[in-house]
Amino acid sequence: GGGVHEANEVVPAEDANSTGSVTAFGAAFKAMEPVDPRRTAALSSAWSRVAISLLGLVGPFLTRASGDDSDLQILPLLKHTLLSVRVPMLLGGASQGPYWARLVLEKLVSMLTNGVNAGAPLAVVRDAVSLVAKFFLQNLHTLQRHEQFGQLWLMVLRLMLLFAKRGSDDRDAELEEIAVEALKNLLKVLLSMRVLGFTARKASGAAAAPGPSPAASPRADSENPPVWWQMTWDCIEVFLPGFGEEFSKSTLPKEEVQEVAAPVAEAPSAEA
Image (cartoon, rainbow, N blue to C red; front, side, top):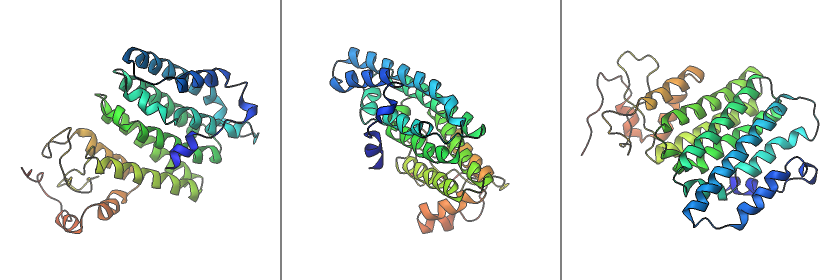
């Protein structure tokens, strides 16, 4: 869909000097077919190092509100680099791919978090929402192979909620809507892949998750879901009160919503 088109955008000529090394690397990247495991591993490492360096270099420019056209090219440049359709194949084909994907994602989230907190222009923040959401989704299969996947997801989740909060604080309805819709899309993908599930309501009712998972996750049985499942819904409830309740109604079948309407004292029994 849209991620592919944006990833293939041509970098404007005026950015050529500042991105010469990235362009040269991209040419070598494009020319090879990732079939040799050793070469794939080396290129995966090299691409990740270049991407991390690029993020470190452009990060400080995010907070500049000069209105200069060159500043507005930062996000398109990052999308061109990070959302290339070849990146998931490269990272996914390397044994250390999950490690490199994690490092790039951590650097991206850190840079954008600092930018949002430091007052990055709203136009830039709006564009950043799709960048982090698409990078996460395009590399989801690789990131899932990382033993700390739950922590990586929570890191992305907190950034998406920070985007929504910035929109609310600055009374920018467009940014808030973009962030919330992106969050819904991320949640739907994770739920449909059985990577994330709804957890059982707590009897206390405080910050309870929306309801039981409709199916077991491949990473844990339904009676003992990962801690980060509950943390996901708790974190969302803090920033967006009532979101989880409404989201579960639109996601779970009607009969399951009715079944979890009242708090339960213990987790639902697992079916064979």
